[in-house]
Length: 604
Image (cartoon, rainbow, N blue to C red; front, side):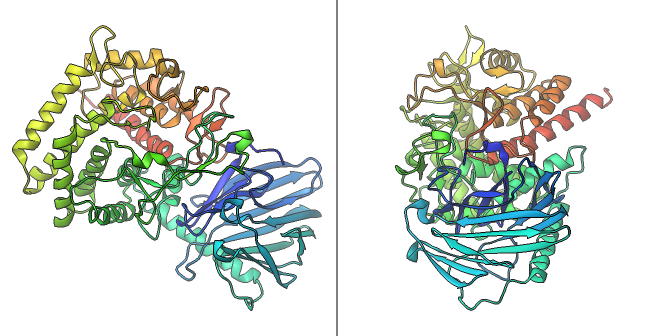
């Protein structure tokens, strides 16, 4: 089977793992029991060896589309032809009844007589483990790969075993339905027969769960549907068990087709998670923020000096060693396919700023900071005071050497500023004099060493002659005023060097002197595009910002989902869906509406 475009997928999940469902009805990516566990379906990364779970109509010329049941993560895939119409409803039940993940697939013939084909071919442990099939009966198969995993497949129709796969062909007439249940983990061979009534109960229960959650979102603006869809994506990536948040649920999807920048994003980055918490708090969602902060507090137990690793496994583990899956061909030939992420070994000083910013917001809008959390914050603030001058790998995780990056320096200022804000607001103990002095030192350093008077712009790193899109965060975190002349000239430089219409690149590859891992053309970075829109709005260019916001919405896929990047041809690139993009969209909406409201306010 040819590789579908990355944007041809919808996602379902239960806050433990996520499955990607293609427009052709094939689940081509799924890891279990958790996001960062080995894959069992990964045809998205190798269409021959990766494994898939496909259900589709055997129409000659079918038109296909997908939609979500409104305000839920319950996905409907439709096959339409003059012969008939078939719907496949996919969801992962969210209940407290069963601890393991399950995938429910409900098949319904809307019109006509429809021939349906099903194929379930798992490939355990990244397709490195062989499995056995135990045929309990013709409607219940067990797939087992020993310690590498197990699956139970139950249907309301007979199946056959073909070359390690469960296969079935059935005909549904108008109004007929069938059900499939895939259960992860060790399963009983004497399970009860699959009940359509029970599947319908799970369907309704899951819809109710998602709608109740969406109802708790306090945003009521005109972009509510768009914002809620992004929020639903972020919720899917928040671990129900641990409270950590993954950057994206996939690994190995390329930033350039045929390129080498194919990373594993199934881990919890302190930076990405803190930004996610910031967005969720603005939406009035408290539960996820509290869970993440508790998760961070547990991390500090093994960090007595206040120094955190930049990313962790979902359970807080530190082992994210990078490995190449040599046997995988890669998405559309994009190799190497990596699992694990060597960036975990890097120093990235910016993470303390993003984390402290989220803690400050949580203190203001959710719950007052606890004694233990403040002690952790004090240790990290001391660490920043002592280490803010250190070169690091930067927000983009360059692998070609360390530099003194502007973004890292900016976020060190944020860490100190927000720590002082919490301390003074809550009358908490701290080394105020040292923090104030360090904050002033960082501020002066940015203007003295990162401002290029000839170029009239803030630059990527000390001594650089290039601009970086992360500079767009400067007014968004209130370091510099949006109408400051130095900022406006920096915005002009970003537009000249990095912007094409609504699309914004992270940096210019031809001016990059740091990372030589891949010289292929990189797509625009979607989060940067939304940062740019927010900056335009804050700078008073509201009409321009709204137009570009609408244009960015046109780059979403048919379900409103975004990958990490947008290619030059408009296709989605990188891991999918990406939290960074969706949280940046939410924050851009707030920036736009706040700027518009401010512009309408009467002047004294």
